[in-house]
Image (cartoon, rainbow, N blue to C red; front, side, top):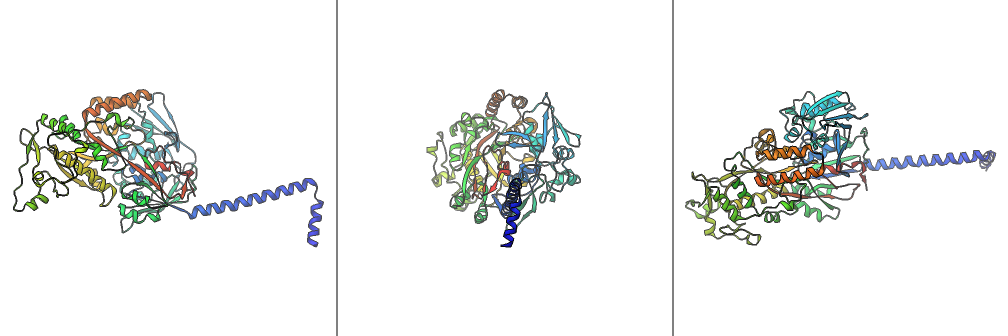
Length: 607
């Protein structure tokens, strides 16, 4: 009571102003203290939470200049590295990222000034030297192993103006060029002594130093079961908005079965396809969100092949393919009719007809003839194991998916899923030129792991193509290769036909894929297709900054490519993002790459 009496006497001795100030001071102390403990608790919760994603593919290298070669690599690289510019999904525009950009009036010079306070994750400042190293030293080196980026900077002059300024000079205006500068920069002070030819296999790709919002906490590694994994930690020295999520963990699974087996340990799967769709649908934790990307799968016809130089042969191969039937076998796909994806694809459909395909081949000088049966002591062995020249071994099951077409144009109603009779199966037509040479082509494609959704997709497509072309009398030899071997085959154009996919990215510029200078080993004109008309249109499209004029030229381009038929454009897939709701703030709108889901990662938060 004595203490209370003393306290009350002290309080009563205060003037009214002193009493008000005291109460105000106490309230401030309570508020500051409360916020301190709330924020401390919030940070503790974020740090304890680990967001985990799974891929239906392996993680190979975390390096932005090789991101085009593997989607999981692109996803993770986008979190560890940042570029001069970035894609803003909300506006679908390219805006400044670590640098401010100015463009000259003649549209030939792009000047970038790196912002203050931009650092690498080892504390070193990001400078113009890093930009020159990335775009000139690496990308423009003849031994650089990413033809997509190499084509984008072909003929571009890159020079350092001062410590924070770099300038790109073009030989001609290019309305798409700005998108190329979204590539993440590489640290010159770390990699300057690594030969460019060795960079693709350097250990830097497993434990890189970047300038993005996340750094490597546990380097990229591979388990004994073939699962690749990496752990990222938030980089608090990042110049932009600091993400709330403290750690991100990624697993790359070699097959669908591996991913499904481990689905309970994942918070999200960025690209759900195949059997994983069913597994995710049956798991009540997950919700799925569909999206598509500006990409397509096509059969590229190597026009250096003597037979494929003939337009009628190329048109016949296309006419034999009923795309609606093929896509009915491939769920979650969208038909593609032209590589100009900005256009309405329905307006560019061709009419398939086996009769027309056969007539085109006959008109081209390839006469249809009955293949001589192979004589053997055992008819059973002959039907199931032996092969004829230029064909692969077939089993009764493999030859029973389609009924041989003879005289009438094929329609979906006429396609049979029943096995042909034995006498029909033994008769096979082939085509020969006037010299008696068989019309046959080598078709190459990627060999995916057994059980993966891509393996299943490739098997369906290849089987259908082989069967349809066989009906027209065209002999196909299918060759499957692992990724590195396939890339070498593509580089040297060692194929007649190539089943492959191409992505157009942010700008949908077709220069790298269809311009004449991109034929051969130096580029990605996979059909070795040369057309003065197409080159002229691509140049005009690049140099115009007027949308209406650009759209008109794009239609002319699509018409010209369609008439020349250098490839058979098939489909683009519909993907699904599956999430368990642990993270909120995710936006999947207007994505050009799956990695674009991380554009707004600064707005993500744990639920």
